[in-house]
Length: 193
Picture (cartoon, rainbow, N blue to C red):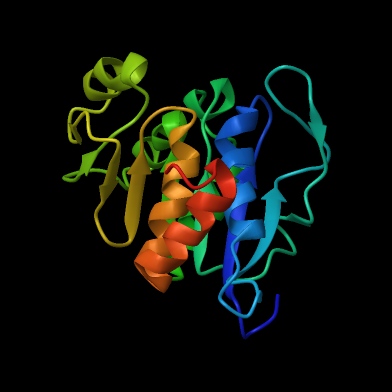
Protein backbone atom coordinates (compact mmCIF):
# COMPACT_ATOMS: atom_id res chain seq x y z
CA UNK A 1 0.00 0.00 0.00
CA UNK A 2 1.22 3.51 -0.72
CA UNK A 3 2.10 5.92 2.04
CA UNK A 4 0.35 8.99 0.67
CA UNK A 5 -3.25 7.83 0.79
CA UNK A 6 -5.39 6.87 3.74
CA UNK A 7 -5.49 3.06 3.59
CA UNK A 8 -8.64 1.04 4.09
CA UNK A 9 -8.91 -2.71 4.25
CA UNK A 10 -12.18 -4.57 3.87
CA UNK A 11 -12.35 -7.94 5.58
CA UNK A 12 -13.98 -10.74 3.60
CA UNK A 13 -14.99 -14.20 4.81
CA UNK A 14 -17.25 -17.08 3.81
CA UNK A 15 -20.95 -16.12 3.81
CA UNK A 16 -20.28 -12.36 3.97
CA UNK A 17 -23.20 -10.10 2.99
CA UNK A 18 -22.33 -8.59 -0.40
CA UNK A 19 -23.78 -5.11 0.10
CA UNK A 20 -22.14 -4.84 3.53
CA UNK A 21 -18.74 -4.65 1.85
CA UNK A 22 -19.74 -3.46 -1.64
CA UNK A 23 -21.45 -0.30 -0.31
CA UNK A 24 -18.44 1.08 1.55
CA UNK A 25 -16.14 -0.20 -1.20
CA UNK A 26 -18.05 1.97 -3.69
CA UNK A 27 -17.66 5.06 -1.48
CA UNK A 28 -13.97 4.55 -0.72
CA UNK A 29 -12.95 3.56 -4.24
CA UNK A 30 -14.72 6.45 -5.97
CA UNK A 31 -14.48 9.42 -3.56
CA UNK A 32 -12.26 12.16 -5.00
CA UNK A 33 -11.05 15.57 -3.88
CA UNK A 34 -11.45 18.83 -5.81
CA UNK A 35 -8.49 17.91 -8.04
CA UNK A 36 -10.09 14.52 -8.81
CA UNK A 37 -7.45 12.67 -6.77
CA UNK A 38 -8.55 9.72 -4.62
CA UNK A 39 -8.72 10.04 -0.86
CA UNK A 40 -8.20 6.37 -0.12
CA UNK A 41 -6.13 3.38 -1.07
CA UNK A 42 -8.39 0.36 -0.76
CA UNK A 43 -7.89 -3.38 -0.61
CA UNK A 44 -9.73 -6.50 0.46
CA UNK A 45 -8.26 -9.11 2.80
CA UNK A 46 -9.32 -12.64 3.68
CA UNK A 47 -8.04 -15.79 5.31
CA UNK A 48 -8.11 -17.79 2.09
CA UNK A 49 -9.13 -17.13 -1.52
CA UNK A 50 -11.63 -17.28 -3.07
CA UNK A 51 -14.47 -16.20 -0.77
CA UNK A 52 -18.02 -17.45 -1.38
CA UNK A 53 -20.33 -14.60 -0.37
CA UNK A 54 -23.93 -14.90 0.76
CA UNK A 55 -26.00 -15.47 -2.37
CA UNK A 56 -23.20 -17.31 -4.17
CA UNK A 57 -21.00 -14.47 -5.46
CA UNK A 58 -17.34 -15.55 -5.51
CA UNK A 59 -14.74 -12.88 -4.73
CA UNK A 60 -10.95 -12.96 -4.67
CA UNK A 61 -9.21 -10.62 -2.22
CA UNK A 62 -6.03 -8.73 -2.99
CA UNK A 63 -4.47 -9.92 0.29
CA UNK A 64 -4.65 -12.78 2.72
CA UNK A 65 -4.02 -12.47 6.44
CA UNK A 66 -0.43 -13.62 5.87
CA UNK A 67 0.57 -10.83 3.48
CA UNK A 68 -1.81 -7.95 4.29
CA UNK A 69 -0.23 -4.53 4.84
CA UNK A 70 -1.09 -2.21 7.71
CA UNK A 71 -4.42 -0.42 7.21
CA UNK A 72 -5.55 2.83 8.79
CA UNK A 73 -9.11 1.46 8.92
CA UNK A 74 -10.41 -2.10 8.68
CA UNK A 75 -14.05 -2.48 7.60
CA UNK A 76 -15.71 -5.61 8.99
CA UNK A 77 -18.94 -6.45 7.14
CA UNK A 78 -21.68 -8.73 8.39
CA UNK A 79 -23.69 -11.64 7.09
CA UNK A 80 -24.22 -15.19 8.32
CA UNK A 81 -20.46 -15.73 8.37
CA UNK A 82 -20.00 -12.88 10.84
CA UNK A 83 -22.45 -14.36 13.32
CA UNK A 84 -20.59 -17.68 13.39
CA UNK A 85 -17.66 -18.16 15.75
CA UNK A 86 -14.63 -16.66 13.97
CA UNK A 87 -11.97 -19.04 12.72
CA UNK A 88 -8.79 -18.97 14.81
CA UNK A 89 -7.01 -17.22 11.90
CA UNK A 90 -9.69 -14.50 11.63
CA UNK A 91 -9.66 -14.10 15.42
CA UNK A 92 -5.87 -13.68 15.43
CA UNK A 93 -5.88 -11.30 12.46
CA UNK A 94 -8.54 -8.95 13.87
CA UNK A 95 -6.80 -8.89 17.28
CA UNK A 96 -3.47 -8.11 15.58
CA UNK A 97 -5.06 -5.31 13.54
CA UNK A 98 -6.73 -3.91 16.65
CA UNK A 99 -3.44 -4.00 18.58
CA UNK A 100 -1.74 -2.10 15.74
CA UNK A 101 -3.94 0.95 16.38
CA UNK A 102 -6.05 0.46 13.28
CA UNK A 103 -9.60 1.80 13.43
CA UNK A 104 -12.16 -1.01 13.30
CA UNK A 105 -15.51 -0.26 11.67
CA UNK A 106 -18.30 -2.81 11.40
CA UNK A 107 -21.30 -2.96 9.11
CA UNK A 108 -24.50 -4.72 10.18
CA UNK A 109 -23.77 -8.00 11.98
CA UNK A 110 -20.04 -7.50 11.55
CA UNK A 111 -20.38 -6.24 15.15
CA UNK A 112 -20.58 -9.90 16.18
CA UNK A 113 -16.94 -10.44 15.21
CA UNK A 114 -15.79 -7.65 17.52
CA UNK A 115 -18.25 -8.76 20.21
CA UNK A 116 -16.91 -12.32 20.12
CA UNK A 117 -13.39 -10.96 20.64
CA UNK A 118 -14.48 -8.78 23.57
CA UNK A 119 -13.57 -5.60 21.70
CA UNK A 120 -17.02 -4.06 22.28
CA UNK A 121 -17.15 -4.82 26.01
CA UNK A 122 -18.11 -1.72 28.01
CA UNK A 123 -19.00 0.19 24.84
CA UNK A 124 -22.11 1.27 23.01
CA UNK A 125 -22.58 -0.45 19.67
CA UNK A 126 -25.21 -0.99 17.02
CA UNK A 127 -26.08 -3.62 14.44
CA UNK A 128 -28.99 -4.48 12.14
CA UNK A 129 -32.28 -3.86 13.98
CA UNK A 130 -33.29 -7.52 13.53
CA UNK A 131 -30.17 -8.61 15.45
CA UNK A 132 -29.94 -5.95 18.19
CA UNK A 133 -31.80 -7.98 20.83
CA UNK A 134 -29.75 -11.09 20.06
CA UNK A 135 -26.47 -9.17 20.24
CA UNK A 136 -27.48 -7.65 23.59
CA UNK A 137 -28.55 -11.06 24.93
CA UNK A 138 -25.44 -12.94 23.82
CA UNK A 139 -22.98 -10.19 24.80
CA UNK A 140 -24.34 -8.53 27.92
CA UNK A 141 -21.19 -6.42 28.40
CA UNK A 142 -22.19 -4.34 25.35
CA UNK A 143 -24.74 -1.54 25.46
CA UNK A 144 -26.63 -2.12 22.22
CA UNK A 145 -28.32 1.01 20.87
CA UNK A 146 -30.56 1.62 17.85
CA UNK A 147 -28.45 4.41 16.36
CA UNK A 148 -27.52 4.20 12.69
CA UNK A 149 -23.82 4.77 13.46
CA UNK A 150 -22.00 4.64 16.80
CA UNK A 151 -18.58 6.29 16.55
CA UNK A 152 -16.53 5.48 19.65
CA UNK A 153 -13.24 6.71 18.20
CA UNK A 154 -11.19 3.63 17.38
CA UNK A 155 -14.28 1.44 17.02
CA UNK A 156 -17.26 2.36 14.87
CA UNK A 157 -20.37 0.23 14.41
CA UNK A 158 -23.04 0.80 11.76
CA UNK A 159 -26.59 -0.57 11.58
CA UNK A 160 -28.15 -2.55 8.74
CA UNK A 161 -26.96 -3.68 5.34
CA UNK A 162 -27.28 -0.38 3.45
CA UNK A 163 -25.76 1.51 6.37
CA UNK A 164 -22.37 0.50 5.00
CA UNK A 165 -22.75 3.30 2.47
CA UNK A 166 -23.55 5.71 5.31
CA UNK A 167 -20.48 4.41 7.18
CA UNK A 168 -18.33 5.16 4.13
CA UNK A 169 -19.71 8.70 3.98
CA UNK A 170 -19.25 9.08 7.75
CA UNK A 171 -15.57 8.15 7.52
CA UNK A 172 -15.10 10.39 4.48
CA UNK A 173 -16.48 13.32 6.49
CA UNK A 174 -14.57 12.36 9.65
CA UNK A 175 -11.22 12.54 7.86
CA UNK A 176 -11.79 14.94 4.96
CA UNK A 177 -14.71 17.16 5.95
CA UNK A 178 -18.34 17.79 5.11
CA UNK A 179 -17.65 19.03 1.60
CA UNK A 180 -15.92 15.75 0.71
CA UNK A 181 -18.95 13.89 2.02
CA UNK A 182 -21.35 16.13 0.08
CA UNK A 183 -19.49 15.60 -3.20
CA UNK A 184 -19.54 11.84 -2.82
CA UNK A 185 -23.20 11.79 -1.73
CA UNK A 186 -24.13 13.74 -4.85
CA UNK A 187 -22.11 11.34 -7.01
CA UNK A 188 -23.95 8.40 -5.42
CA UNK A 189 -27.48 9.75 -5.39
CA UNK A 190 -27.62 12.90 -7.47
CA UNK A 191 -28.16 16.52 -6.45
CA UNK A 192 -31.26 15.86 -4.33
CA UNK A 193 -29.29 14.46 -1.36
